[in-house]
Length: 131
Image (cartoon, rainbow, N blue to C red; front, side):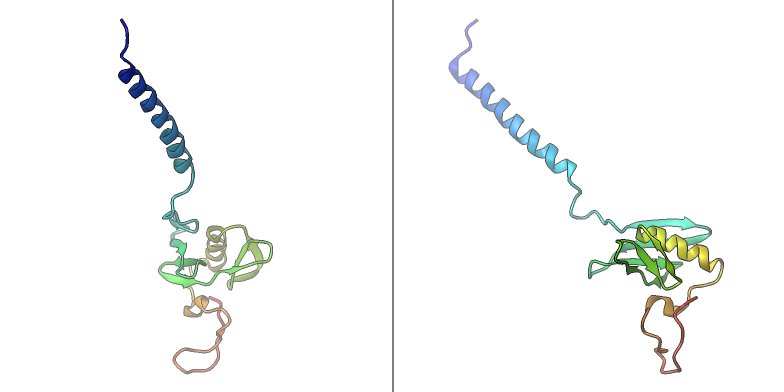
């Protein structure tokens, strides 16, 4: 059976298009999507609900039972919280877990979210930021 030239060309064109788009789609699938949040976590840890996400300024945001926990980036690339300035954690999740380990069953202070701002927002006397 002789294949008409038109059918042969269509088949070659289809194979070429599939090969090009298939490779492009594979490369796109390997990349993380723009909506992937590298700081996202949501778990129950030692009876506390801890959540994390990227804030509008691109910095990680951490919540412990709905209360914000300030995270600071260290020069070594790790993170610390005001709960423990001396232990560097490799990720925001690890820093939040370390804060929960340190605080135990106590509730986070409302000042744990505002490290560096030691004043009472209600106009009272200066306060600490630790739990």
